[in-house]
Length: 210
Image 1 (tube, rainbow, N blue to C red):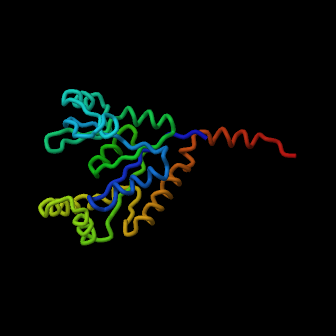
Image 2: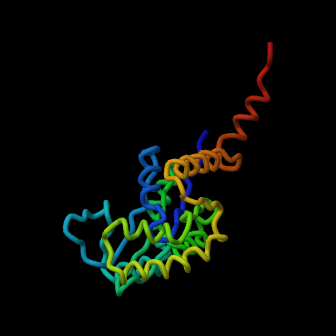
Image 3: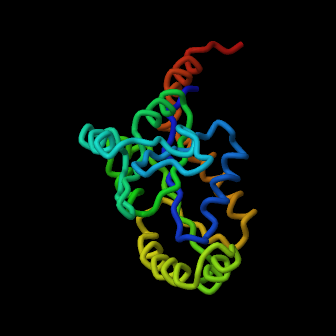
């Protein structure tokens, strides 16, 4: 039975495990498409066009926003970032789900877009703020100043938890991944998302029994 692809929004404060869970979800289901963002910043060494980002000029980006070709967008440190609408719509027509790794602001914009009816939103919480800080320090990537900034921002992120369809506490990565799989499976099987179900039931009811 045909169905339209979903827009799966995955959000969390930095360090709660969102990126790891996104990778695991895509390993579990290779048909999932990860939303590749467009950006106006220059490519970094090793970055590939269309794989890591779609690199555009500021004028091109602004034109896409003006033409409603961005599902969400934001300016970060002088550069624009956004999620192009075209590839998502193509995936939806093909029955493929698109996974978005965005913050609460990006999630709000996607839910408010013309495609908002196809959104499934999931927020990932850490088991505690001390544990979140421990994970950030354990990555060994950030200075004390950056970690303090991330912890401050995490409170603002967490305050938007009630805007999401599902909220998961990531105290065990394997269990949280299993719950994500269950959410996606259930959402795909919703009656209103199975496009050919009505015709199937009609034919079923018309069949004669022995």
